[in-house]
Image (tube, rainbow, N blue to C red; front, side, top):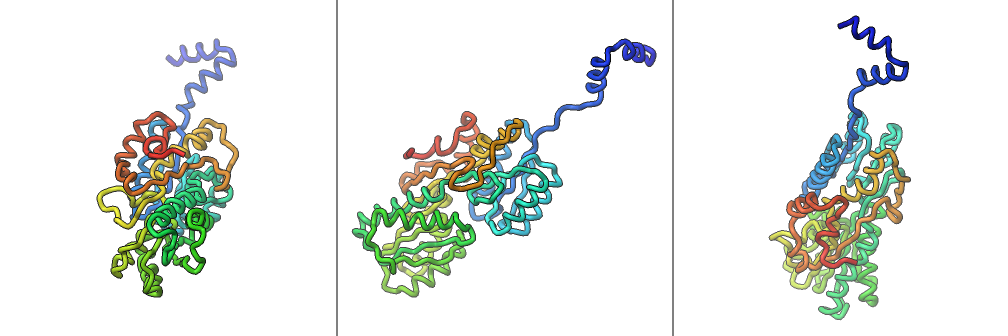
Length: 351
């Protein structure tokens, strides 16, 4: 056996010998490895579903997949960046609701030469994939304005804004955009009717803050509510309900988190769907597939000129009632042709 092997190698040309030795020592190429940092907030089923969709799409592509939860905590997000680097991922998707720590994450990933996609919150050096925040805000505000025009001739007593200052420019575009949209329909609402409070995008934070605002305006009855997301708006509606002042309060949300299902607040007149759980379709189709193929696109980190823009889908509560819940949307998405988005599948009014 040894003599035969020596004779075979001795008669090979140098090229054939090199190929034979390479074949003997080199295993299959390592699979592409994707890291996914989910937000970790327990408020919403789409948080977990973002990871479920990313994992399923990675599996379809034959990639390795590593998922960690940021637990809505800056320190955890920082630790997770180190774990992704140690895990030798080839790219990362970040959904981090604590943008103050993003520069730290960016420095770590840049040093490790790992490209990052960020959802909805921009960071220099990260590919931005997310909603057109300003367009989403304006669309929601206009829809609420049409209700105020028909119901009250554009004369509300208060317009409450549930802000999320920590989201930075996202809050400016979304919440501010809702006021802009409302003003497009109802331009003569006096400036002193607009009251902002910090809701942090969470009903549990928004509720007591809104209750304080309502207590300070005891005569206000016709009330409109806008905000960063459904949760922030919902907190204000619940505050009015607790105070027995919900007869004439109307909210319009952003993101679609609380506008489907069996327990939609009757005062939430609509929302702007983002179909948040399906963002991985955009991230992979427009960015990560190209990175995996060895042809990474130029980094586009500006939310105004993103790597991939998610189309907002404003829906009334009646329209939302006909849209499947998160689990059914995910199931349909994963059966759809590659590159199909939930906007394609479920938005009742395509713009």
